[in-house]
Length: 194
Image (tube, rainbow, N blue to C red):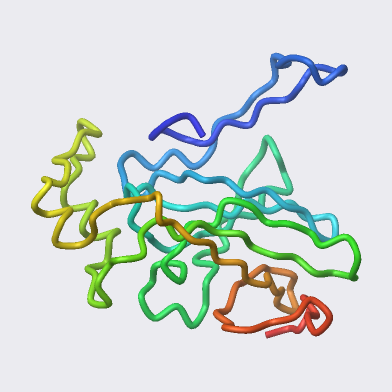
């Protein structure tokens, strides 16, 4: 991520010790909360995906996934990735990695940080909250005051916890994440076609 601007894809040199000249820029959306961050790259069935988060400080927001099979070409939005996500906040987490479990067929795990654990259940939609504070013309915003932050969280990320959820795939091969309280790798079958 080029901070608060866009995603940059840059190739490495043949010996993997430096950056090659070829690069491309993607997902340029102008202002938070739509600018993407926390890219989690993964591949499945010849397709490449990038799971991303919006920019809303440590407050959770909806994850979006992109089909980036054409690395330097068009990145296709697959929309919000988390289903049955009542708070529209990625189950109060920011996914930053998708891990393919090597000892079982077709099992992928989304690993997320739950940065803030003290947010009230009636949190505002953080996309709207941040969108109303940023100017599309300048890219600058009115940041949260200490009093506003204190109403939503103490913002103490030292108490962060983790959310690990299975990534499943539709019949067309698009990834999605459902909330499950308990799950077991042995019982996961990513290609369930929902």
